Length: 91
Image (cartoon, rainbow, N blue to C red; front, side):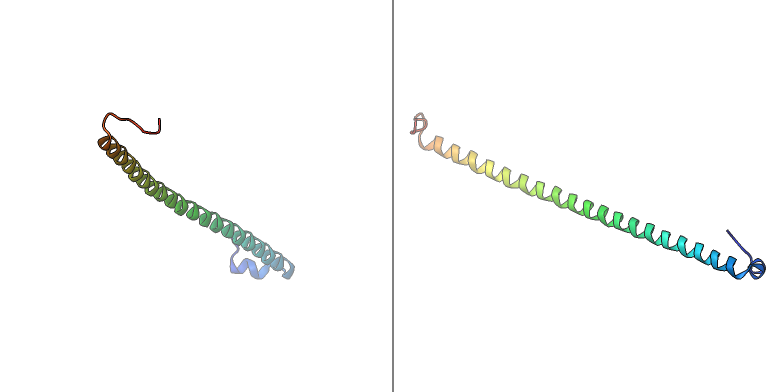
């Protein structure tokens, strides 16, 4: 509601106080909505940062698994070269 200075001067004190209360109430509601939006934004930022960290961790783990697989393959290859045709001794 837009009121000119001339119209404000014509209003009674009770009307002015009521308008002030309405504006104050609206300002409080807007502050609450802003705080809620900021909280949601912070949660989204945390989720984005966390998902980036999880993706990085998965890539690092993938590298560890690849290195472990290479080591296991190399071990088996060494075992096969040391004992050709004998197979595993535990059998």
